[in-house]
Length: 327
Image (tube, rainbow, N blue to C red; front, top):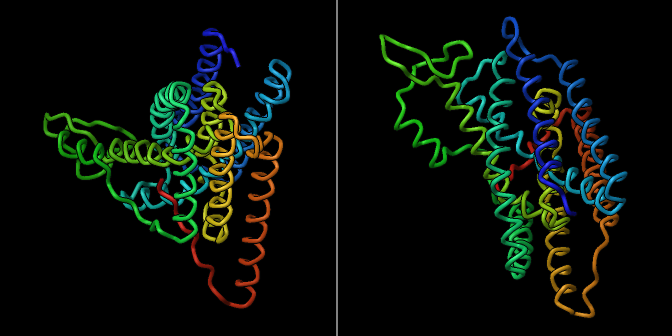
């Protein structure tokens, strides 16, 4: 899709306005916990924004481009749910007070969005120049799907290189100083754990992009669609964190669903690459098939997880936590 610079600027500007308004709401008045009612409202608000954007794309660019956006958005949102497990671990690891958690997520995910934007532009340029990367992305998604299915990744958080660098370079206060990211202690300017947690959220989310970005490139190679689908998925992730709460532990089949989606997109990438190379037996998977597979898979795994959780609760059993994929 040929998108003008003005369209890029308009979309990015609109997203920044919404995020600035969100941040203003968070910062006004005294810090307070984010209620379930507020979380539900904002999740609905951001999902509605994404749907309206998809409808607008349908009106301007047609059904195929709109279908690519919705498939990409559903994929990114589904994979983002898995991120929430690690976000909970990070919040507990740094003992972030609940009244500050929304701000931490907002700034951390904004950092991730900027870094993902650069990642997407580089990826789009590389795929356009080096067609063989489609095979690499497809194989990587299949590898990730198998590891996720086998429970290769553990539910834990490990500090990455950037986070360790921030800790080493900048002096840090012993505890939180309200919601401040820096504070002057005994005449010395220091960073607070608030900044450390924001960096942890942002960089950890970027690591998750190692499988989610190749996944969406398997559905569309349009950088504009890839970016907007990522942006809308990330923007609604913070409120989803508070809305789901303990429900995440009941989604015991979520890893199976995500594994199937990643494997499906990996196979689709390879088939599309073969089809583009002139291989006659390789079919081209239409976007409506991808959209249907993603939607049905997430619906089935979610419903099945909730049914199992209810049965376990009635029988007095415990529900094992879902596995975590860390890219």
